Length: 287
Ligand code: PLP
Image (tube, rainbow, N blue to C red; front, side, top):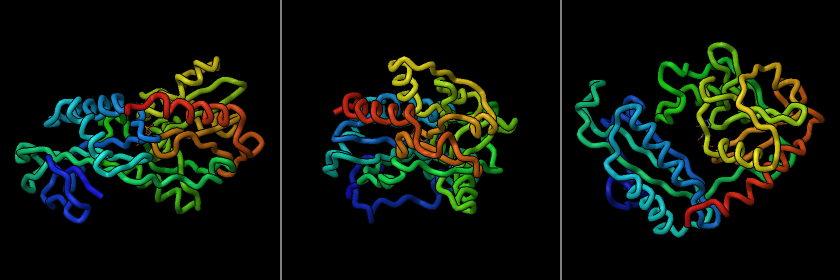
């Protein structure tokens, strides 16, 4: 496996960064997770745009143009000869001194890793998953925007820890007002009376690229698809609940905090959206 690290491809063993990197010391940096289906990079442009927006928001200047970075992603796939893959792009503030001030970091580090895909077991897509809501709150939109996909993923990690303590794989975070925000690394949707709802970005959700794709697909299929604030109660009484994300794709949720969703099986709308999504991913990609 070859990893792109600051201008060259190196082996996994040699792909190491300094302990003085501010990404390591402070979580100072941004990242993206991108999916490749049959050699097609899914919505590469959107991922690159989001990466540059995240970087701009934290005043981190990526030392490549968007086109150069897109080419690097494709190049990393090619040198690793991968058809179906998960790609991680990381840009950290770089090596500096122990102080917080990023001025001591002379050059951001750019890393691109492409790996064989570790898929969720197929059974989970057929059975749906159980989730809980947790005490960890999404950070407020008026502080560090949840739209910034930063290297600081402590909230999300705590969500996973809390999920694990409850014996489930994923959980929902609420925001500081108690509205449902998102999962640890996925967005949430509910279906009620044929209408599909997902929380708006300002509630504290990352505007997921899978989320955007699903919103488009739902509208093209003629569903009423709205961004709307909702609470745990709405999730409990929804006809269907599902999560979306680069890794998860579209996965049904069949139990939330012990409440069975609908009839306890992945719903018809969720299944239809997953089917359409799987068609779109190959057609929509960058070769
Ligand atoms: N929410 C968070 C916090 C995430 O990290 C991710 C993963 O990227 C998502 C949602 C889903 O976004 P996407 O569909 O772009 O992968």
